[in-house]
Length: 319
Image 1: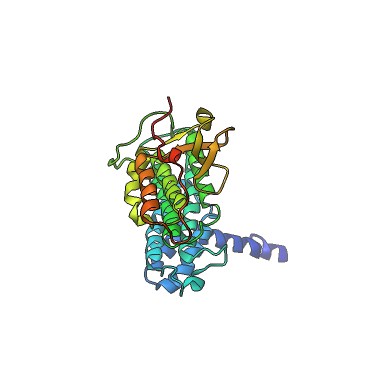
Image 2 (image 1 turned 90 degrees about the vertical axis):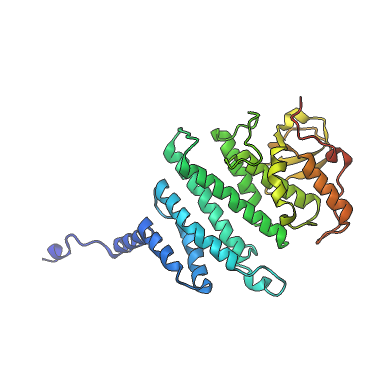
């Protein structure tokens, strides 16, 4: 009798697992995102952070994950725009527990993590097939570079440290795209400066140049002073394999194994390394030199010395 009564019943742990899985289904997540719009920022922000954190562990197919990220993008941007900026009086309240990031940095960090994960899962689902006009994949690439840009600009404009792993994650993403064949560095082809077509190499170089300006001027200029120029500069800049420039002096290194922006290596390049040499556009170098002349001191320190060899570097590929 007892065996018959319990026959077909599932252990309580299985019910709990089923409930948890249902709670992380695409339908359940979408429903919660819809309800977030009716809440105040104070109420919605912790829930939004939790959703982003749990979304990475949710058992979803690639298409569902893309659609959910498309739905969550607007609440994330709305929350980020509504958060107070880290003025001296509000810095402590804006910090989160992990590494001193502000809540806005945490939001962007989680969005980047989800977008990167989704891109990799989407590519695995597609296999070796690479379709240039794949709308979902293009959207993922556009958004992940845009959120990287938001994260980097936030640090520049509000004099914050780069969140740990931000540069490493950016380098890893671009190396992944190169290895997969999404980017061909030596193709000689790039979109026009004012073309809306997406080009991952242009976007990567744009962010590298933002980091370079910030590095060589010691944060003398907020990003809004030059961000609108970065696409033109990135179009006229190049990434060169280090083996081609051995013996050259005062080069800009992009070390893809280091969680850091491009940096100036003084002296001759004697050995190769994992990464590229960034040859900045003349316009970018000119802007850096102008900052040196017109702003002898920055927000944090005296401007870095920029050797004449770098100021005269050409964006053209070496012959």
